[in-house]
Image 1 (tube, rainbow, N blue to C red):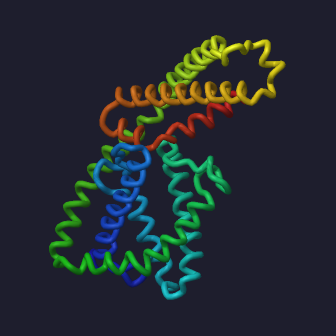
Image 2 (spheres, rainbow, N blue to C red; image 1 turned 135 degrees about the vertical axis):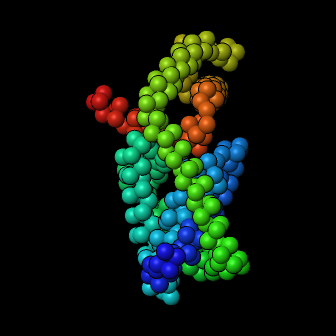
Image 3 (cartoon, rainbow, N blue to C red; image 1 turned 45 degrees about the horizontal axis):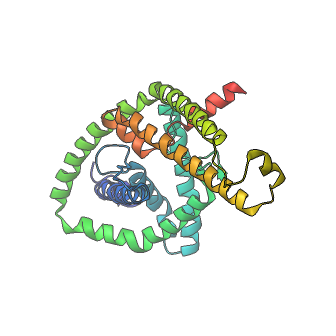
Length: 282
């Protein structure tokens, strides 16, 4: 089994590289998202320190583009095509299997169906060049440091733990579809409640001294009045956003295990539900 080769690379090295790249991908994703949100967030699909899509993506890109590894331009363009294709297929498969969305580029320019976007694709091209020129030589040297027998035993042990972890995570992901409608309904109720609260606050809005609501229409060009109104409106919007975010955290805290981790790590899980809900309304 270990001698099986794909494009000149034996299975032993492929599996070792897969776990190393999965771990490095997890470190990158977790570090980036944790810094962005100001708290630790595990970004892997499984509970353990592995991000499967990075491991599979890095190995696939390397094996497919290995014949053109000496041409930087072709590597860059090939990385864009191959990695973007893999990202799109992965998004479609995960949405089809779990009926949830694990990432969303809808707010990015030049995106397609929210699953891929130009910025990310260009990033994959740069990553591919770095993979061949910088990262992979280091990974190869790392695998060469330990005896092959130790590598085989280690891979077998890690694989068993990985499969058990993946099965538990997949089981939890299958149930997300059932729970998302409840969460969305609760969030919609909270949004309505907060909007009513904001409207009430706006009706009792304290204007600058000597200014009434009637006079605002006559003094709409008054820069000071506009400034105060804008500041108060922004403050109310910020307050509403913070309250809604706190309510979301409260909903997440009521869940357990992988479900809680998924909700914290992937805020766009409800994208598919919202799209279907919007379509039904129309």
